Length: 304
Ligand code: PMP
Image (cartoon, rainbow, N blue to C red; front, side):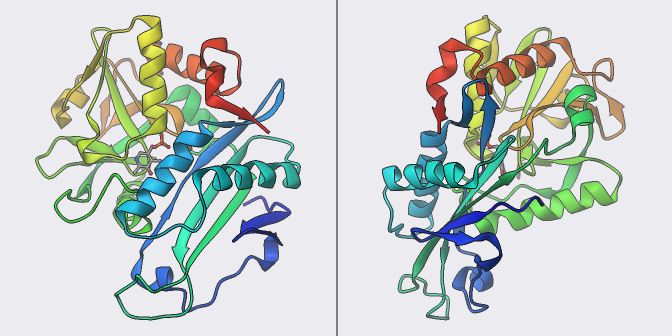
């Protein structure tokens, strides 16, 4: 990982190597913490954070869901992220990782008296699933892990604890020689990737599941808005694994993954085994949006 100069911790800018926590930090033991993943792109008009307000709102909503009282307001957290990027003087695209966690002070499961800490790190980060993946697509395996059940975990929260499920699925997929995992829900319908939402294209129609069993993805929402503007027909409905095997195109969306084509699922070639035409069009439009080249969506950018 590329080190930056400073990390924001509870209102202060701390040198990267000094941004430390106590080993009895509550979240480390019991897993109640919430976080975000946000990107900033080097546009022609300088670095711009993509959908800053939406990511920061989701962060605070995640904290509300898991009963963590964040000591900072939406505006304060937005300002902190902007100031952090200014202070670090980044030269290329950046990934921002805000984390609200329970700190050092009490032990035991009852967490409400634990101190709440907030940290925001940012560093220069390229494509998550590789530049080759963005262009040529990745190989995906349907996971043997079911996506966290809505009966026992809360998937609308981007909660630290939810990522054990994602991590195990990712590990299994990579160990088996694939590049990403696709998780089904308890009923066997497609839920999401380990850190991405999922789309297919069939006969020119763009299909993505509702967010019943996935995070409310900001990238998914952006792609749907782009598709709407382009007049592409959209369906929000459940998808079965066999439908994935016979779709024309498939891709993942996520802040880190951006729009990543899928060329193969479980040894079945998707479409012609290359990035599909609709995928290419949406991916290219997505990059136009995040780089501020599409005036209709410039409201999604916060220039720092
Ligand atoms: N699902 C999961 C489990 C994720 O971790 C992410 C990444 N935040 C997504 C979906 C995609 O969400 P977004 O587009 O808001 O990054």
